[in-house]
Image 1 (spheres, rainbow, N blue to C red):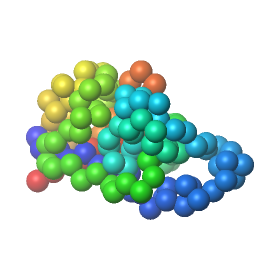
Image 2: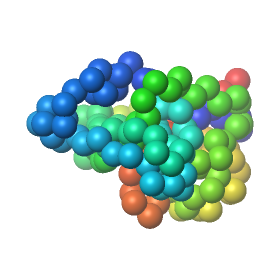
Image 3: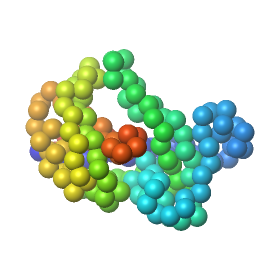
Length: 156
């Protein structure tokens, strides 16, 4: 089953970089500087931030449907990056290099599949989950921290 991973749009985050630290704190967010290239994966570019790069760490709702699985968590976004557009069946390195939780949801926003796998196994796991016609979309989470990484849907 073919899939496409979808990054978050940068539009909802651009203005955050112009806010003061106090204004960010009022929005449950804060400014961070990446200390290395291993710990701050951007949900817009689907790449790890480089050492010294400015990021915003914020609370973000990623599962906004009216169901018991409505969810949000902390995410990082980098300044002035373009939205990643992975090709069909392409998995970004930031996902391939981590332990990933995959959660398949139906049209009502109910979780009907859940798997945890090493990133290198994500392509096969995604394909298997999406073979179930009841699955509308899959959320990928960085399993150790539990935070949202990206979503995936069937691709033609």
